[in-house]
Length: 300
Image 1: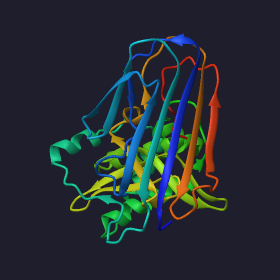
Image 2: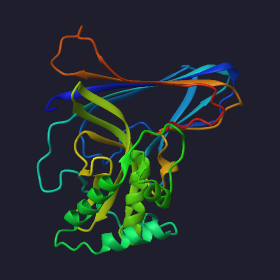
Image 3: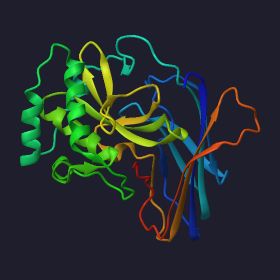
């Protein structure tokens, strides 16, 4: 994947009746410190008679705040971005090389209470000693990937570390949260990241919403760890939002009237150099019916 790739990501909500939407928060714009070069970016929202303002949250994430003055039957968000996925060079290609003041790191160091499974795992992880701090964290990342089987979970929420270890399975967000809790119990700042993952597979190139973790290493910065693969993150990991807790990086959040709703999500990739009439590869299509919950896309 050495050429630029254009991703078109569409999120479409359809309601069974006209509804009033409360303020909607959209976190689908790459983080300013994302190591992957973003060549171009645009977000379209329908209905078009909305009010949109951009701002940064307390963690530096881009947030689009959207409001509507009237009832709507549909709410569509289309993101188009072009990313340069050429392999990075250097000793820490996955790192965000932006200094973070020590006081700011405190928000990423408070762990949840540990149960017996987590205490045992932390003790084992703490026994790993290497001269290279990144190599030590990479070994812990591999431990989690080896001991937890990946599963897709479309329901909202994140399991706590004890449940993920007890079940020995979980979604990407569950294993990422486990890694974060292990590191925080070891006194290492760690944060939760949501974003796009573009990667090759047997059928071509795939893209999906994904979750991973970042740890702060002195003199390096924030380094990404994908607990699903057990590897460090790469150019194909396009960070959209990073925060202390998973609920703070939801792609779309906001309230709406009680109703039955249908959610359609699709992702299409276009590779540079192909003719315009080349059929785009449909990456993902899902539908959730009879949804009465506030907006919030699950990251599988």
